[in-house]
Length: 294
Image (cartoon, rainbow, N blue to C red; front, top):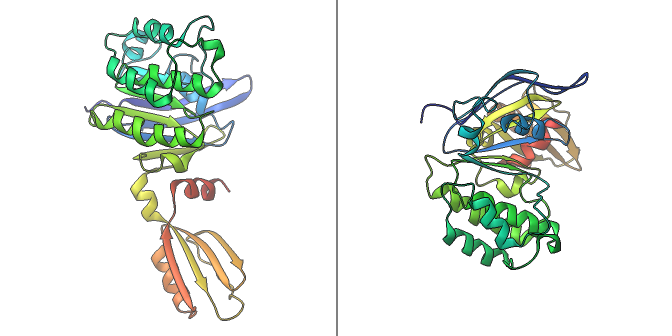
């Protein structure tokens, strides 16, 4: 599939005089799990709402499956599913009624997956929605998103309110299985603060701050580029500087460094100082996020 699943070009969305999104470019290819990271208020949810035609862009272009979500809303939304941070359903409905209602709008609905997920989440189909906890409403929202087996799954803090065990199982098993069932066609776009828990799924990511891109990389390239280096010395660590460092700090007899793309040169310079020990390891995506926005 040559057409990107999501393509943003110079997206701007203003609230009054405030630029929530400010000239954002982004391309998501089919079959990938794309991470969209940023602090609270960075513009992530605003961007997602522009994708879904829940907000109109102030400027720029938005394309989903090559379509304009405003002009071709049905063509876009029939091929995706969306789970927001706060999930809401008609409170008078039961779990079963909600699922039947949502399924009625879909051309395809996997009843086997529905049954399996109800069992996995231990959701009672006869229970009223108004009696569900926030975590259970989130679980119900996730079931309604997975069962139509959409081409695009848009997740905005999808595991908010889930306990750690259910959260880990959902990410590793449910989302992983959803994509693996048709890896060339099914795409995930996820905005989350729980970056570590999605680490094994993310293929590519963008970090934004104040509505602008700060960093965009493929996950494997990011792990190669950013290295955590520790050097321990017999006494007080010597002064050390290098243009390839994102962070440099002393910790007792150790230098604790984060290198940005020049780790070999940093290590060579450190070895000349004859440390007792020298170790290096790749940063996780969460550590890269933290180091980038510090």
